[in-house]
Amino acid sequence: MQFLVTGVAGFIGHRIALALLEAGHSVVGIDNLNAYYDVELKRARLRRLLPYGEFRFQELDIADHEGLMALPERNRIDRVVHLAAQAGVRYSIENPFAYASANMTGHLSVLEFCRRSDRAPMLVYASSSSVYGNSNDVPYAEDAVINNPVSLYAATKRADELMSQAYAKLYGLRQIGVRFFTVYGPWGRPDMAYWTFTDRILRGETIRVFNHGDMRRDFTFIDDAIGGLSAIALGEAEFDNPARPHKLYNIGHNQPVALLDFIAEIEAATGETARIALEPMQPGDVEETCADISAMQRDYGYAPSTELCDGIGQFVDWYRSQRVSAGGTVA
Image (cartoon, rainbow, N blue to C red; front, top):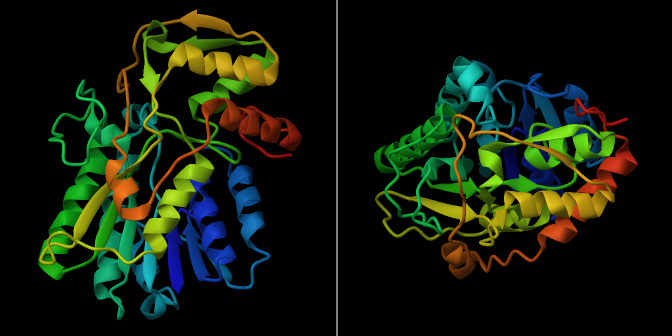
């Protein structure tokens, strides 16, 4: 099959592209290589894909609909894995229009691309655990009523889901949305807590811990996340309602970890002691996340197996071997 992967220079994007290529498929990858974090890290990810003869990259913003529709392979795409987005909960408070463009206009552009392409490719797209808000009803199940986002980022991701539901109903466009829960690991994002904590601990600098450490997160190792995403991208989807072919799945670990225990794992992996500054809750944060993964287990045999100590150990080893700078540049 031929896949279009948006956000292919991103953390999850380059890993799913690698998995698809290694499985013998063709991948057209697009990314706008924006400067939200160091572009050299994105280019380093792309360099892992370039040796594959069945990979082609084009620098392109998904919000540029004319550019997207002009892709030479447009009518030969079998499936789309749409991961391009403006990430980050806190950054959405500072730069809201970046999220409207990338996450909403961009998502609509991809929907129209799929609808107007000859093969009407199935669309697999990234949503987020952020859509659940600050609910105390854990673990979060896909059929939960979610109408109280606590950040603009979460609101844009929920809007994407609703747009996709409408396109499924109006045009029969087959779609699966994936709500990722705190994916981490080698080649990750410099704005994520595990990266910034590791960097500061190794430098002997103080780390800021919000809500005085009273938070829990469902951490998902990248290999487990890609295993689930690959199963969806390569599988034959069955939809409960053929008149509205749209489903949502959680991809998480179902084992939330207290933030201070998470920091202890980084201390163990680095062999260093963290200097901690306890601070109040940040706007847009939630106290706990926990994925109900029973639907993924039932439909795709999803079985996350990487324990946090192993995953953090792999990240720290990679971080040290790549000589990563604080800004995210891979030496």
